[in-house]
Length: 431
Ligand code: B12
Image (cartoon, rainbow, N blue to C red; front, side, top):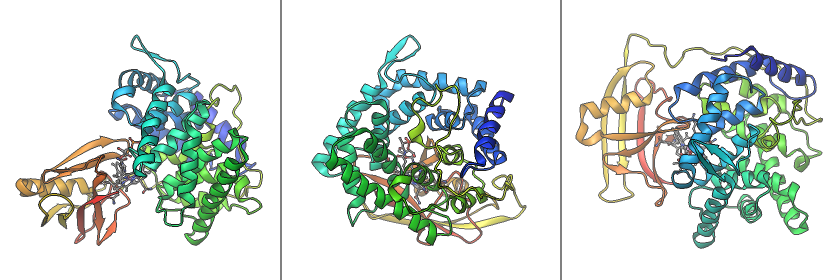
């Protein structure tokens, strides 16, 4: 529940007040998305720093649930950051604390104190050591980008070397970095660009940022407003919002991009958390110092087109709508990568409108020796981490990829709704 009128008041002032100046979404959409995120806070088991960050960036700072979330984030930070978190998770915690006007170098909770920036530096060192040794980070370049962004905003060391690597990666002709990764890398590189006087570094970063930003603009033009897919739009818009000087004098038709986003009915809190900041004219780059300011002044591109009329018709309840009839779904699990190869197919009946997870459960009930599986709860919902006893492994960079008709799904098993007669494949793959 959005539990204070204050939150809405701030939001309306923010969204309404800036709409005339630039590309900002209608306040009704912003309010709706904030409400959905707020509703998710207590429902979800693990506190999500991206949700706190997005609420702060949207100016929705008054509610009690947000305060509760901040406390949970601090509790998690002092108990789990050092031993249980990846570098990227720590980076998101740092960003969320900055945006809450808290000092991440000095997090106090449950009678404990931690320096999250120092922890992040240690974890970043491990990422860099692995990058230098093997050419790949310990986790992913997406996380390394988050790390560099958080360290740069903290004014701590360790982000320049990472930014050089990110720049070289995005400029490499055979890079296959996702839109999401390029977008966060662009935010990190923009921060670094603003912090360095080294001309060689600035030249490299300028080239890389110009490549990413122009690539996004090209993709948006070709994709009728979409850059990557609907779930990479949030980060891509953040990047375009922050990199205006690197594509100038080219203009960004942000109205087209915002309209594409507004046509989609975002439900997942994590998806909302990434898309909300650009809708209010902000990016993760604005996390530091934001909530400490008494007056909100969203960073806006003066060149942005003010005309923006996205349709506002949330398609309520699609995931919960059930028709009486069952549907039939074919399901195959395949491993040719590790150990004894296997491939099994089954067909199950589930109620129409069921999510894919229901199909996996039906297959497991039907034949538990073959279709057993395990999930882990993540910020994006349940992730399938093991099938038929074969587990994904971060060191080996293996995972269970989901496809339909040979095309990778753009949603996870907790939200994807298969159609009657659809053939879903789970293929053990590498990333
Ligand atoms: C890196 C990444 C992966 C890596 C994670 C490896 C690793 N150990 O780090 C791998 C390649 C395994 C992966 C897999 C998938 N991914 Co992915 N992934 C990302 C990416 C680029 C960054 C996530 C991250 O590192 N965040 C930072 C860390 C610090 O936060 P975190 O909460 O700890 O991150 C964890 C979760 O994000 C989780 N995760 C990653 N992807 C997905 C997808 C789903 C559905 C779930 C539930 C969890 C999950 O793995 C991360 C590391 O543990 C995001 C992009 C984005 N915009 O967020 C897409 C993204 C989250 N992935 C997405 C998708 C669709 C998938 C797949 C379903 C693809 C497929 N067709 O199989 C699978 C998951 C299938 C399954 N087994 O359930 C979508 C989700 C959209 C949605 N509506 O749910 C995103 C947003 C990309 C996009 N724009 O489409 N992914």
